Length: 108
Length: 150
Image (cartoon, rainbow over all chains, first blue to last red; front, side, top):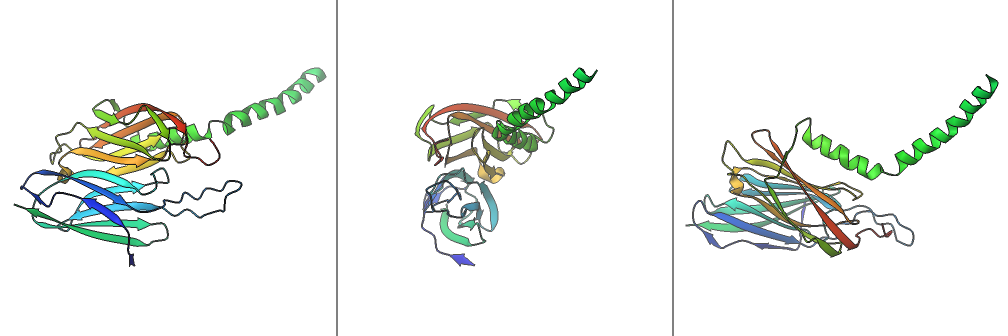
């Protein structure tokens, strides 16, 4: 089960082997907290609770998110450039929906 | 003796009411303390080794920039395995957890969090050697992220 999601992934197009590469990910999502307050139409909790990044098939980063993460979650992390390959970004939403995006890192 | 018993009976509801008050009020902080204890799992944290970059004063609690840097060589034998963000007065004290490996190169993460009110942010960083680093920062929030004004 894989849907589409709007994400802006920023990473250098090219890196040297062994270089520490910064990766910035901004994804469009309301991160509904399921607040039940007077005057509000109750919306069930629906957040991206898990974010996982693999690089050339190996997991390099994982984040557990809570309702305490702002809407349109932004994450910044680093990874060591080891080889030319795809970074796969995977979000899991409440209810089990999985969203996936890919980006290629060329290592010289 | 009768008087004593009556006094004892009188004292019971008062004590119960006090106990209920105490239990009802700092429920959120209790959860926060429990969350920290659960992460520490009996280990004693070491103060410092963590730089928290966050504004001292935040106009809008719906989105607060937070960047964390942990001093670590990130080698195979000595690296940060997890970074936890806890918010003292948020309805959910465990805000986020990051899992890292030597493949990260540096123990640096950044994100944007929601803050219900003025409070303390706590960061715990677990290392592969079994140590836990601890650092905290106070933040003043003008407009909280909670709809009920809390």
